[in-house]
Length: 122
Image 1 (cartoon, rainbow, N blue to C red):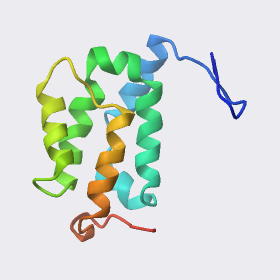
Image 2: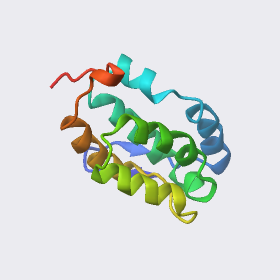
Image 3: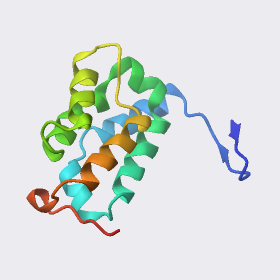
Image 4: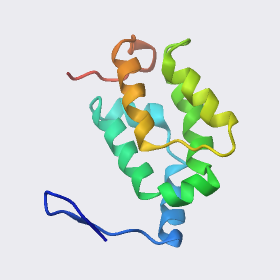
């Protein structure tokens, strides 16, 4: 278990628990998720999913394979995030991590959300 300054204790999930969560997460439609949650909250929820499954995801890359193409489709072409996500997708020793979501948020903030009806509630 990890204890943080706030006093919050997070339990490390066993590999089997992580794999069970991954089974659910890979079925997610990110466009639907983004259209039903406030921006950037939906990215925060994705970050939690990636955080709690990171050990299994680094080895299996199932969330990476499911979410990266969806994210690329939502992002402005030629953005820094698209380039990074392309690299992650092609590099079998790399996986999507919660750390990548800040750059994605930055690029989404600077783009037009109307194409996917993504709500910007800033």
